[in-house]
Image (cartoon, rainbow, N blue to C red; front, side, top):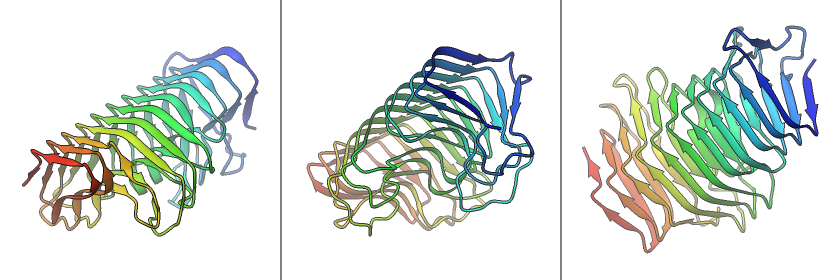
Length: 313
């Protein structure tokens, strides 16, 4: 019952707005995709609505090996939301295979997550993601050894009440044993992340498990600029607002990471660390503000990292 599109060039799905609805069939398996696109080039999905309709894991619209894709002004929701499990639940997922020139903009996503892996030149901008579940609201994951992702822009997105195990925005090694993977030139800027009814990590870069041994991984030239992470006063949280996670065992450094002008506001009973940066080399930590955290800004510098004009309130 899944729509399958393979080896197509130059096509589009265009609707008349959210009244143009594609819904997962109620008789389909509770993990079934709505559609899959494999080796698709020069396509767009615009001005439509998609209903996951009772998905319990995975699902959504999946892309494998795509080039020059535009996904814009869509709504993705679940009209029959099921109890949470440990599995991811997708809206759009760019999974295995290499992707190039991906634009995902101005979409509304409810109770589901957005994932873009292994891409060159990916732009994820101005999306609204509410109540995403499991791993990340917006995520990029390694999946396999020896791959790479570069030139990402994750900007101007609004994320609300992410019920996630990693971070509302996550760029990391998954599985954590991944080796010889390269993340380069990743810009994460001017996103607004709010935790109103649940508390979780705002951002995770690196590895979800720094006790897992790896080799040959590279995290270089990240810019994390002017993001806002806000926790409601009623919430108590013992984790991190922004966490760049690695260790001697994980065996990689963050090279030329720039952490600039971010604001992380906790609650009066916050127990965690506003910004926790591990094993930075030749980085810059400047003009960040952390409010009402047990530890505001923690930086572990290997060499050459500059810290200036950061504020703790």
